[in-house]
Amino acid sequence: IVRPSCDDGGFGLDRQSVVHSKKELKAKVRELIAEHREALIQEFLPGREFNVGVIGGARPEVLPLAEVDYTQLPSHIPPIMSRAAKWIETSVEYKKTSVICPAVVEPELAQRIRAIALGCFRAVGAWGYVRVDMRLDTDGNPRVLEVNCNPCIESGIGLARSAEQAGIDYPQLIQRILDAAMELHHRVPLLLSPVVVPAATPA
Image (cartoon, rainbow, N blue to C red; front, top):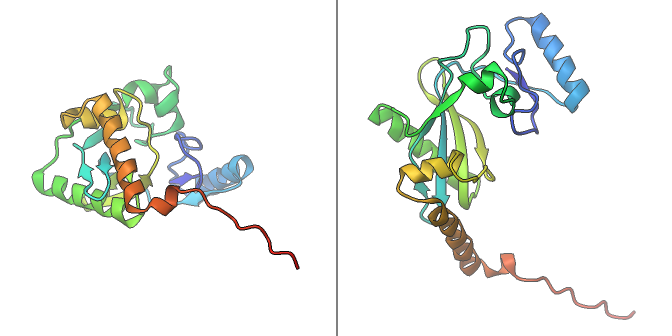
């Protein structure tokens, strides 16, 4: 799969992003460099895709898993969260891609996914809220695609949808995020304190 390395929202991802030959690879890299000045080439992971929300501060909570369902897509369209799947409501990708929350996952796999998400939260120093995106590889192992420390928190979708499945309504979710911010402020007050620069001493 070929994608921009520093973009978001599915931009730069389309039906030609999953390549199967050197010719397709070169064409896609050339296109991305022309449009985005960058191209990232990665192994394509063919397995199931999960979004995992984590909220809180020193004691983070992993929310119920959400799975991106690509099973209704036609075979000629790659199962990826492309720009069309996210934003173009008239596209086949948008109409045929859905999210299942809570995801139906075997207990052992669900436990592994939650543990990885929690590890990612701590590894990047996240705080308040985060979404970890994963896909399964050919052996069924969870592999991290992205750790999004500023995911969408719009009501009814994404992180908020997962929170609702945990019994956390939208006002409560926002309050939990604010509580985490205040917790951080009390733990490390200097991070949020104004910096006073002393006046220069005359020579």
